[in-house]
Length: 237
Image (cartoon, rainbow, N blue to C red):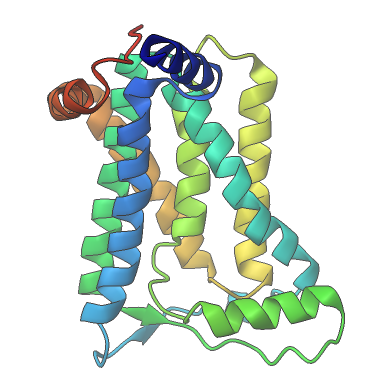
């Protein structure tokens, strides 16, 4: 019976996400939550800076883009899995890269706390109501850089050089990232410098991780954890 359960678990995870990638991917989302929520607590009461530029005032509010803003959470899950299921080396590289980008975000959030002034949304349609809900739920801080834009670009950067995927997967990732960029601006969640800085940080961190091969050392830690937690189930690649 125990062997049968093991076989079922291995089958399920091999079809979706390899067991060796489960804890690393979870660590990405946990670290993201710690950075975003933890910094907000630390920065409470501190002076925040508004990085809105005159050009940001020209950008209209388009509540319909709230669909993209919320919908990207699903695409992130898909592309994270696509990036880590190729093999352990690719998983180590992407996860290390993702953790590094969020660490840089944390340092910037602490060094330069930011905020913006959101517009009054008076529409009664579903999109306007959803946008007001977002404003109520998500405080206007931790904006520079935009984590929404950063994660979306990370997904594209990670899959960009993976030869095992057809070009359409990479094009879709790029288009999704571009739409997310637009969504953050037209929902007035972010300003232009937040978007640009997110792309810059992503590209710099990818270069650092790939050239330094620091992911090899990071993987040693994850490998030890995996062996303790999943040793009966791991089906390595």
